[in-house]
Length: 409
Image (tube, rainbow, N blue to C red; front, side, top):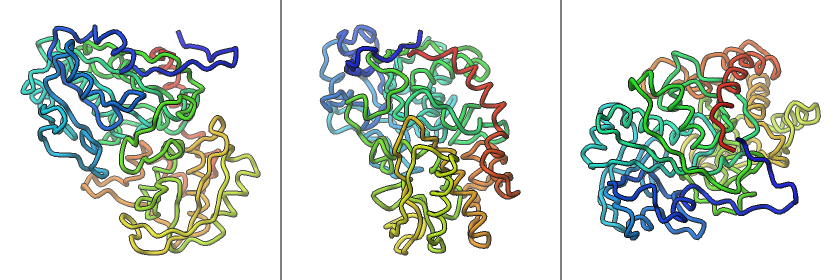
């Protein structure tokens, strides 16, 4: 049953699934050959890495490590990973499994001679963040195995909380590496809860049966918590996710990757600053006006200039908006992105444009990120923010109903 927040004002310390598994002396893993899918975020509260702790434990036979996008130690930029190599800390083989799926991924697990795959990844609560999809691919591959390979997911907090669910649900025809199954853009689930949803709703139709899955739950976490409430250390899960504040805006402002505007990559505040060389003060004024009218709560806006060191407009002066989340419990990131996109389309009609994908799918990148053509077409047709949001409300009701069956807290 979902846990209620403490009523006496005393906050329990949050223990991750990793910590709770270690507290039981790794009992769940004893006697099996273990593979660990993780990255730099797989740490205890004292910042020891899970791979190092497992490797040193007499109870764990850790035989292989697996790296997602950005690599096992998290050094690669977006859209890339680290090649397979030997981990210098443990001496274990590291297999690069980014963009692997199905039989290819299963072959990698077999090559590593893994009986239990442990997954310990910090998600950011957004559908187009790729870690949840390498988790899905791992579940499918494990379900395909004839040797009853198991997957153990060590749960971690959703850094943007578990109460707000928003944004469009991915639709058929728009599946890609940034979204493989119909979930909401901001899903409001932990990675352990998502594992259960994937395994219950989607894995059997792809693999013929569900995976043998176990989720090691957190303790002390409740759904209204944001990451700053957990007292856990923040380790950037990717190079452009430097702080919990970045995660708060990412599920909305990340949509600007599908436009010709800078989403702040190449600065110290990626996804918190949006802009372009042709933007002027009217964008900040429009965002503030939307806030006054109640169209986007829990945020404040500062007019800003920045010069990205890489990515869009590298080396150029960009004008735009810096978004400050003032009330995380009320802030809706997708709504905030719509405020800015609608204003840009109206104010800079001849300059603002949608970016097409680089890999030849023929679909707009914004459509793959948002999950369909609905958002793009509505903005192009001059719809207002509430009209746009209404277009996916029925899909969102379906997802919220489905999601309820898999919540752990």
